[in-house]
Image 1 (cartoon, helix red, strand yellow):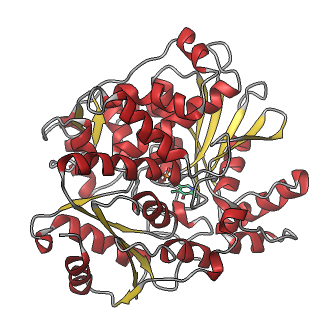
Image 2 (image 1 turned 135 degrees about the vertical axis):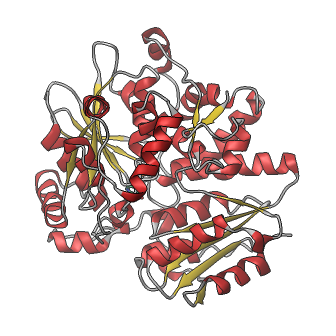
Image 3 (image 1 turned 180 degrees about the vertical axis):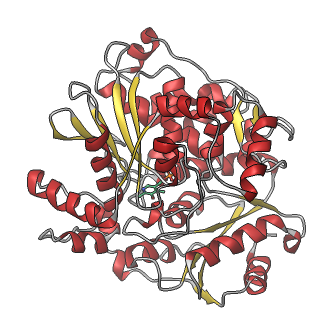
Amino acid sequence: MKYISTRLDAPALSFEDVVLQGLATDGGLYVPDFLPRFDDKKLSQMKKMTYQELFFEVTECFIGDEIDRNTYREIIAKSYKNFSHEAIAPLKQLNQNEFLLELFHGPTLAFKDFALQFLGNLLEHFLTKRNENIVIVGATSGDTGSAAIQGCKACKHASIFILHPHNKVSEVQRKQMTSVIEDNVFNIAISGNFDDCQSMVKEMFKDQSFLNGKRMVAVNSINFARIMAQIVYYFYCSLRLGASKENAISFSVPTGNFGDIFAGYLARNMGLPINQLVVATNKNDILHRFISQNDYKLESLHHTLSPSMDIMVSSNFERLLFDLFGRDGEALSEQMNAWKTASGSIEEYRWQAARALFDSYSVNDERTCEVIKEVFDETEYLLDPHTAIGVEAARQCRRDRAIPMVTLATAHPVKFPEAIEKSGVDISPELPHHLSDLFGRKEKYDVIENNLASVHRKVAEHRRK
Ligand SMILES: *Cc1c(COP(=O)(O)O)cnc(C)c1O
C-alpha cells in the first residue's frame, strides 16, 4: 500500500514512513491511495471474530507486506491486552434501537487508547528494526496526553514530552499523566493555557534544529495509523448488531478534529453498510456549520464542558475535502490557500456531496447537562459530556427508528466531574477498580514558564541520545 499527500506535491510513502513522518512536506495529510473492500459474504465470515482477529482482517491491507503477519498479530494482541473489558468495545442498549458503543475501557478511560496503545507498539516495532531513537512531543488539554503516555511509555526508543496547561486540566486527567514515572516520560506543565501549549508544539515541529537531527514524531490524529485503528470498532459493532446490505446501522460520533468520524467514513467506503453518519459537535461547531450550510468560517475558540472537542480548525477535515475535490490535490491546494485569507465555503456541488454523506448537530453546554440528567433519569446510565453530545445529535438527526443508531461513548464520566456536577444528577462517578488508587499515586512533572526556549532546553537535555 502506498500513501499519498492530499496536496499531491510530496513523495508517496510506505506505511512505515507515514507512521514516522506525520504531516507531508507539502503541508498535506497522508491518505491511502486506495481502500480495501469487503463484500457481504466476507462480512458474514467476520461476524464470529474476536476484536483482535477482526483488527487484523480489517487493517491487513493497509500494512501490506511491511510487517510479517505473525509479528503484526502480536502487535495487535499487545495493544488490546490492557483493556479492562473482555469485549474491548462493549455495546450497551439505552432504548429501542438506541445503543452506546463503550470505547472507554482502555488504560486512560477514553477512546484514544484504541489508537494510541496500537501506535506505541507500532513505533516500538519500527524503531527497534531501524535501531533509531525518536522524540515524541505533544500538547494536551487532557485526553490525548494521557493516552499517548500510556501508549508509548513502553517504547524504549522514544522519549515522550507532553505539555499541558498548569492547573487547567482535571485532577483525574493530570494524575493519569503525571503518575507515570518511567524515565522516558516527561510531563511539562506550562504556566499558560492549552493554546500556548499547542502553539509551542507547532513551533517545535516547524524548526527542529534544537534536536540536532533527531526525529520528532507526532501522535495526534494526523497520524494515519490512529485513524486506521479506529476503523475497526465500526466493523466490530456493526457486525455484532447483524449489519448486512439490507440492514445498515447508523452512527453518531462526538468529534472535534474529524478523526473518529473520518474513520467511520472510511469504514463505509470499505463496504460496511452504514446508513447515517452523524457529526456531533459542541459549541465549536465549524463542522456542523459546514455540513448544514456550507459555512467553513473560523471562529474564536469556546471553552466548553466537553474540552476534548474544543477546536477551531479540524485537522483531519482535509482528508475528506480531498475526496470531495475528486482527489485533485492541485485544486485542493488552491482552495486551502484561498482559505488562508478568506475562509468560507466550497463549490455548491461539492458541498451537496458532503451533505449526502453526513448529518450534523451542535449541542451547547446547557443542553449537554440536560441530556446527562435526562438519560440518567430514564435509564440510570451516566453519560460523559462528549457522549451526551453524541446522544443528543443522534436523537435530533435520526431519520428511521427501525434502524439501529449507535453513539460512540468516547469517555468515562469520571474524567469530567464538572459536567456531571452541573447536570444535577445525584451521584458522583467512581474510578474503575484498576484505577481506584490513582489519587494516592506519586506524581512527577515540571512546571515551566510559558516560553519556547525553556521547553527546548528541557527536551534537548532529557531526550534519548
Ligand atoms: C479526542 C476526543 C474526542 C474527539 O475526537 P476526534 O479525533 O476529534 O474525532 C471526543 N471525545 C473524547 C472524550 C475525546 O477524548
